[in-house]
Image (cartoon, rainbow, N blue to C red; front, top):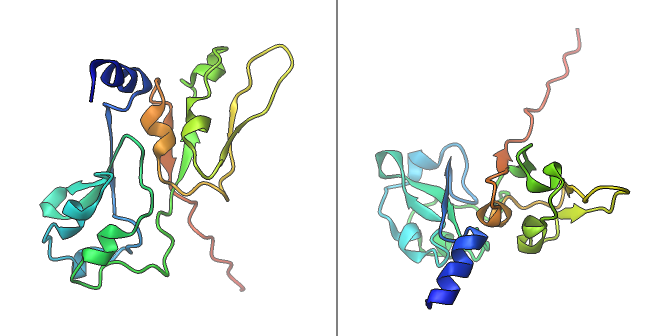
Length: 167
């Protein structure tokens, strides 16, 4: 990477690691029961989204572009850890109050990084547009957070399903 490219990456936030203690994509709560911690999924990830975590289990550590859902981690895993029938990630992005747009500064870097176009900036009269995230479109890849200059994007888990009791 050249000097100009590395400066651009620095200003866009691509040299920064956005850590998150999360399970790998397409895994369930029981993944530690099947995972042998061989590290094959970590080596296979072209985006370097997976890294060794607590106890040597792979965990998601978003860097740069976020997860592209290529599936290489699942393809190389010798154990029944990954299941493509599952949703890749169960979380969605959330914009926090330190977002530059909330402070009146024109910034749309998160929208530009969002491949599924889950983030939109709707025009507003008299002030810069603020981001709106469509939770049903958001894949949880976290590419938006990797480029946010304010670290204003976090992940949120879906609310637990409420059981309806019939008494």
